Length: 406
Length: 232
Image (cartoon, rainbow over all chains, first blue to last red; front, side, top):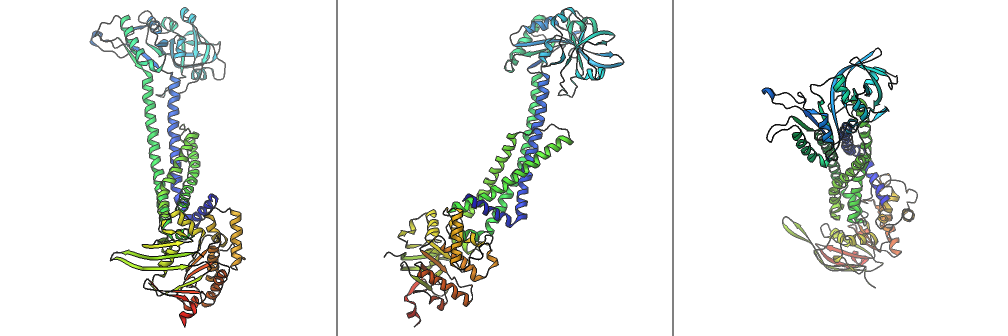
């Protein structure tokens, strides 16, 4: 029965090939647009997620500054008010899982005949945990390196490429601002950050070494900023409150007075970016869905024409014993076949298009089984939905009217 | 013996803008198994309306219609479809074959709607094509054969589900005299095999093939009897 219906549907579609093709084309364009847009949207989300996880999760950055001395307001970090001791105190808060003070600077680095200008971070081993960073080769420095302010360095991948080329940098000595440093490790590659900076163009050294030997500090033990990581995303608000209270107390800031530091929630910034991407992919999907809808209306239109054209055939079938549901199924089947086969071609085109976009525009695209499955299900539903009305119209035709129809 | 068709006070009105127009004004008729009945009458006398009601394609405004003992007025659309499929075989003036299906598929079509398997459908369809003398062309299409041959295919289709009753509405209306004779011979042969046949025609010599003649005039039955007496 079903087989026979498929054959009948095939015959009916074959009777007017151009029309069937054009109807299908509506579905093809709709589905391929949906698949392509989903791929681009999910690709964008994937890129943002990558950037977020490369930055590290649940992060705060605490900047010194916001001073009002002398009536002149300086930018964040201008006046060093944070110290390594502040960082240690923050690390003891229960809401905080890791904390790292940082003394950043720009320095010229030399190895052999190569030289390179890069950002140098003086920090503690916890920085790697906070930034979710791995050491690809060699070893990270330890707390004892921090205590004794040894001249050791971890190099980012970009620095390695520029100074060493193919040479193995481990246990080689580089010069940072004329002083020799021993390379003990190479950091794993992270790629670009959300704002487009190359995160691998960096060198990490012990914080004490940076303070005392490389950059120097205005006051003993001060740092430019502190990065801290909350134990969980839920604890972020409490962690921020606890750190504010702790630092105000440590800096003897009176009730009502302005803090001499600023706490920024980096994860919140990231989430905003993620949210924006999400909105973008939903919008892309919605726009593509409209073309799917238009394709569906095309199917309905053609099916209505087809029902009118085949009124007499319907009459004959009814006269020899077709039930209403047989007629309904026959026309529904045609609509679904058109939408499903249109969908199959559409998925192929969409996947091909996504690959092309990936190649030409170099945009990340992600195609998941779920999105293809969804496209299929939506297409089948569109076929049933838009095929139902014409099919019902056919099934409810009065037999004698249908037979008399010329 | 119970009648195949029993009609009591059958009435039919059509709703028009000018009000209801009565087409059948109260008819009583019984047709028994094995009969070969022809219905004659001028245009507008209600022949076609009557046939449509007999064929369960239309419903009467009033009156009762019993088809092999069942009161058709009480049946739902699925049950009516089943009757059309299993009890009645239709033969139309315009043949009404499906143009895109070949002869075998056309003949097998009623069997599709009562879930007969494909192999059996093909076998029975070929058997019927053989019976009407068209066994040679099961793969041909309706537009490749003559009108008389198309009507034979239509008869094969009407017979394929072994109906008790064949309803033929002007089956020779589109055919020449010679072919008409051949088709009527086929009907007579089927009747001799025991199938009840009801035939509508406006040609007196076609009506003579039947055993019983009924005449309609203006929505009423005005003659019911032997064919020969009507002409004498």
